[in-house]
Length: 87
Image (cartoon, rainbow, N blue to C red; front, side, top):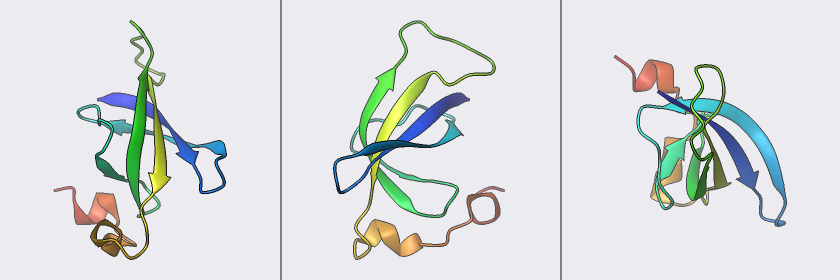
């Protein structure tokens, strides 16, 4: 599992830390992800830390922005990843 730090790039152009999360495979720019808040985000950029491997810390920063509420990807609002996607 790869632990990453999510950073929001909001509509006013500001950046702020959201949370840490883990992925089985590292997302790439252009992919959609679903955060623990149940909302869809588009990955803008993946900033990997060169050679950094840690059992406890993040290995990359994902810069994301929210998906437009009228897009098909956002129709999964309220998705509970643990209950709805995990076996």
